[in-house]
Length: 119
Image 1 (cartoon, rainbow, N blue to C red):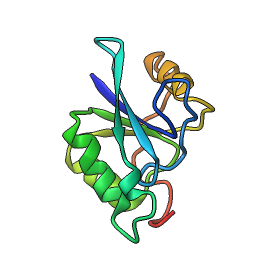
Image 2: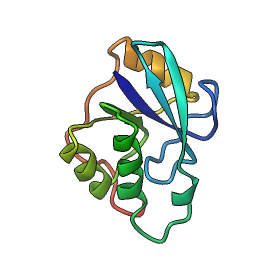
Image 3: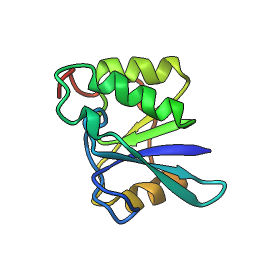
Image 4: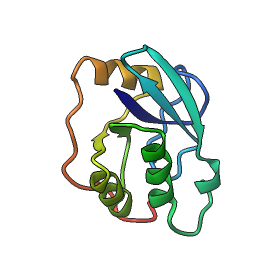
């Protein structure tokens, strides 16, 4: 299964980004292969609107089944849910910590957005 983690950088040691739609990168972790790829999301950093929806489209296109981020707004949450992608909200220092928590089953699936739009 592929899982998208919001990140500020290009590696598992990168800081975990608490923003979904406006994170700099997504680390797409493949738990079956124990490997990852990086998807650039910088085009949404300063978007006037639509950052969450565009980011959701990016990760869905990458084939993820789940998203792990600090926060997820209502439009992004609806787009992810419509695509069958599960959302997990959490706070960690690094992407690696978030990956470990996901793999150990330590995260709770979100049932709605946890912030207002344009967060």
